[in-house]
Image 1 (tube, rainbow, N blue to C red):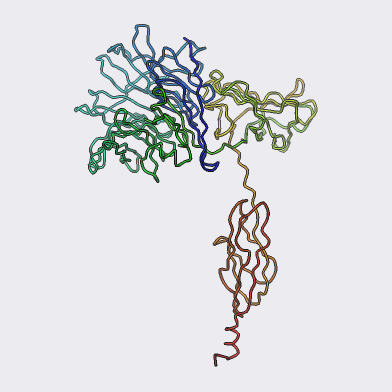
Image 2: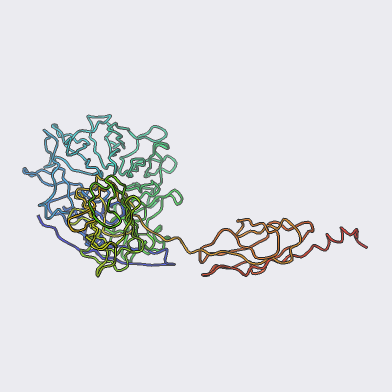
Length: 614
């Protein structure tokens, strides 16, 4: 087997202010139709003619020769689900990993025991969970199509349906493996949507009890399912639909383009609040997006509103994948030359720092000197530090990047003892590896500590490649337990002596520094009465009982607007207080020049003296 590398073309397009930036990336493969995106939207899969492909943003599209489908994949792109040919020339379910080429091709799931092929087809995989469960369609001993579930431990089994004599298929599975979705034919041939939870089938219907069409996608925990074939009697349109246990099936609309629909929900974000898909027939089909606030709209219009202009020559026909956070969307359409696939990223500028935090316990310690000498076995250990993209070095595009450690943030604690690292000619730094060629990993190679003669090493290997979907530092935001580690090395060494640590968890999360804030204040003069209350931006009430300086308790971020006003005027005697220089914008310093001047109400004084007019 061989893999063909085709580079992607990225067009960075900006409109409006910086926070409205986005990117449109042409996958760069003619005829490609994208079907799925990874958790962070950095890996995609799909089909192009008779071949499946796998794409990442750094290395472009790779044709998976001898592997067809590209029907779906796990959250981290390991594996892609599809089919290959068995020894008899029949298509059978198979899985393609990122080491497809060096591993000699796909991993074969195979057909159903005793299955009889039809038109050289036995089975195909459509989805894969993050815990090794694969779903799809297979033929039985009567060549009838049925939805299957497969795992390495249990093999292929049939999913129960309410009409077992009729065809069924499993289209996808939740990341946690709890929920499978797909369809089961009615006796009329209509594909009714089905949800399997713990293997139990639920046929989907609208509020009137009418069956709705096939279920096409499910979020990571199985709580939200989307699909097609919701017939709206008011509009006559065939709408996309959205299901939760609380709401049941609800139509979410269609686009009226020579008729309303048919509309499809092909992918859904983790929170269920972004559904992408398509509406329309043939060349009139257009990519759509649904949100609770915006309803269903054309994806082109939505992207434009976010500050991204779709390049000339592109018509977005269908959206087939969305990232977990709903901000990266992939699909296919009519490009300047041919049908092709694209990825739209609507994220703001990414954070440039991330925090790594590790926890474990000492399992051996014979260090003779230094702060950790004599710390007993079983003592809890923690390590934390920040990494930065500044000066990052890409050792292998998309697979291995080295990030600098910010030394002043590094802390290694074992009980009450602690130590840190020292600067070296090339660091210290941490390498994030992804799909290299299959394994993911975190590598902090042996680095000197502050204690002379001692070094620390921290490495872990994840052979399944399911920790990351790129070697980028931002948006990892995960905690990894022992189930992710095949091999770890966490040790402080001094010659032949060492403190060895068992790793219990490691997390990497974006670090965003708190915004710089400033205080708003000024001076009160002329105050004789009591009860004066000032406000900042309509709140943050501040009672004043004497002349002099005042400061509001709530600090405001740099660039924020502020308004100081009087909420309650003083009494006994009654006074009128006015504010000067009370409006403005915070600009890199505390505000100290707000002036509040109070004068006694003359009419109140005259009334007290008994003078009430001529």
